Amino acid sequence: MAPTGEEAPLDGAPLTIAQLAEHAGVSIATVSKVVNGRLDVAPDTRALIESLIRRHGYRRKRRAGDSAPLLEVVFHELRGLYGVEILGGVEHVARDHNLGVVISELQGRHTPGRGWFEDVLTRRPLGVIAVHSGLTVEQSDQFRSRGMPLVLLDPTGDLDDEIPSVGAGNWSGGLAATRHLLGLGHHRIAVMTGPAHMLSSRARLDGYRTAMDMAGVPVDPALVCVGGHRIADGRHLTRELLRLPDPPTAVFAGDDGQALGVYQASAEAGLRIPEDLSVVGFDDLPMAEWNIPPLTSVRRPLKEMAVAAATMLVTLSQGEQPPQRRVELATELVVRSSTAAPRATE
Image 1 (spheres, rainbow, N blue to C red):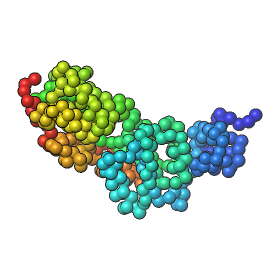
Image 2: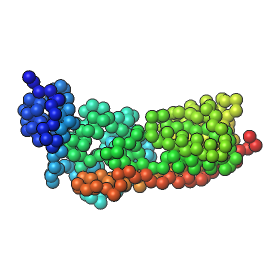
Image 3: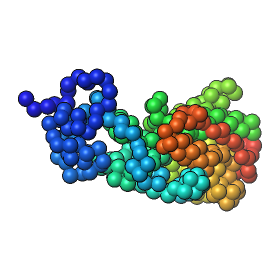
Image 4: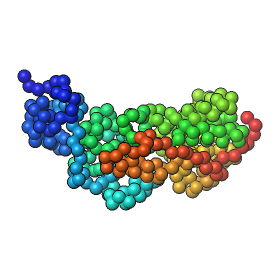
């Protein structure tokens, strides 16, 4: 009978390439190709070997020369100043350790597609920082089985206890932004989030709801808007909000890009910021100060987050454990000229 990969582990210890080959009924060379990311293996054979690796384990000891002196950074989408801030932090750590930085991009997907992991294995980096991205269970298992360190930076989904991550205080940032607007006297406060499946979107919305609840101000469902982190989303959602019979007097945007969209739609409608509409963004990218008027925004320390993630990755690549596997850096509300008291009592 041909091997199926479903046998029980022999002794619970990770298998060698030779043992994997024996279990799969293939050559050692074929297993080696799969382990090292080569694509010239039949899909069924690759699936069988990956199944064996997941079930039995394959955790070779990484030796000097096994890896290239590289840190790989994968973005779901590389655009704007967000990516610039992240790369600045990673490169700061890479320079200190005489390492290069490789960048890959998922073209808007939050989960890498087929073939991406094999490409990573071919490059043989010390480890991977996944920015604003998630991995499938299979991909996470592949990293673990190869002993390749992985760190999530600004993770989008629920966290895996075994994968280190670095994030920011999204809930506290949403709370601070909303409390600021409430303190100015606003009650009709709209909130814009990113996609509902994203951890940061849910946390910021929860912070908004908590602030409203603590102030005794009911949340109008019509003022809760779900979009994407793009200028166009902020513009479209603001147009919809301004058509309401009782439009908002303030908007808490999901990021600074959305906030710029709010500015654009407000100008189209003949409204002035902050006289007619107060606006708060999130991230506090350099563009926040360039807006007219300058944008009040929740500062997320993106560069510092990247430094923390890259430092954690270097530590893991050296066979050591970082002091913390979950790092959350504080956010801070930076008040500028885009927020003021509402024009009239609501």
